[in-house]
Length: 279
Image 1 (cartoon, rainbow, N blue to C red):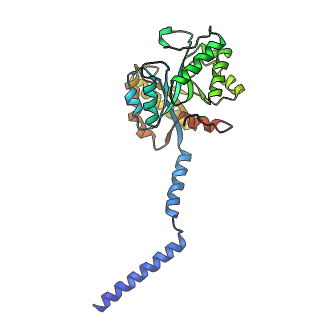
Image 2: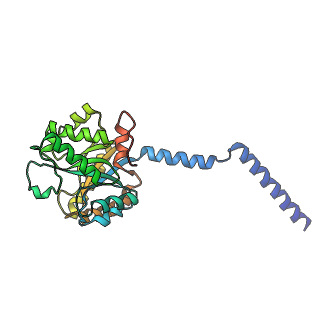
Image 3: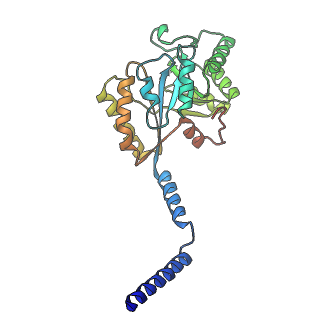
């Protein structure tokens, strides 16, 4: 019995000594620091993806599904529509980013597709400025702006200079949806020093699960050779389809892709720090 007792006393003493040795060799908190460093390293190696969803504001198909995706997205909301303010408030409360989805004249298409408050190239400078300012005022929590349609307007220097001047005055970045590959937005934004980012991939220009899935594969391919990607989807006719494919794809992408807000990429690409007016 005495031998057994002595054995356990020695074992306990040995354990204490080992703990002391470990504490001297491995500083306190180093495990947490190691985990933190590993998390930082993972974030550094992950590619970044910003998902922008257009056409909010009209209680369109897929609105709820998009707002409840398991990652942060950037919500582009059209002004002066029935649910403009509600969608902006809901998106903000859920931690999403809000931008103004500014209707602009296209080369082709019906005026009715634009919605209220649209910008046309025939308008005076004063009217364009007025419409941009009113649109920003109508979308709560907006930190940026992108074009709704606008293949004609984004090719006109006079028009886009006014739009971007207002964005600069209000502290908004501009996101060029690239509905016109001859867009003058990059040139004007550079001249005015307005933070700018451009679209890489449209998810749902064709309304089918097969097409949206193909575009997801395309953006993943894009990220193999690029550090970041911006992709645009929509609520409305393709809304539920796009939301469903995104929801199913996100978990598979998360190990290698970090989902970010559009403004995160704007800040990362700008020469000077970009300060949001309503973060």
